[in-house]
Amino acid sequence: MYKIFPIQPPAAPRIIPAYKALRLTCLQTDPASFISTYAGEVAFTDDVWKERLSSPFKQTFIASYHPAPSLDDDPRAVNEGEDDGKDAWIGT
Image (cartoon, rainbow, N blue to C red; front, top):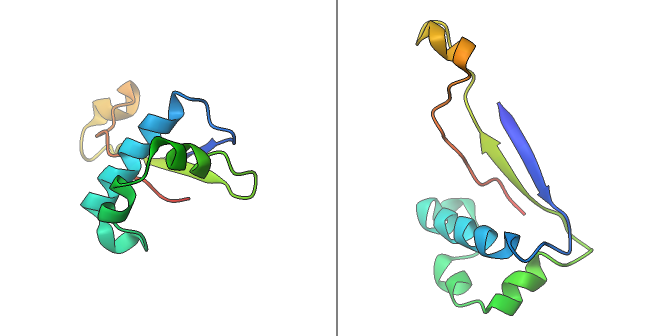
């Protein structure tokens, strides 16, 4: 199951460092999924990160992936709502 979390511009100040950390982690973890590079984006100033999330001309979102529990794996997982905590950055 995916959950989509849009970041509405202008982003709240508390969102910007979380977005920055997630984006930089994803650039290091799966660089082939991005046109930009970690080396390029790690050099951005805080103002650049704020500007990226404040543009009224684009939408930034985060998608979180949580596999649906299977009765074959553990029948209690369905009742307890357990997940494996896997989250994935999807895009801007």
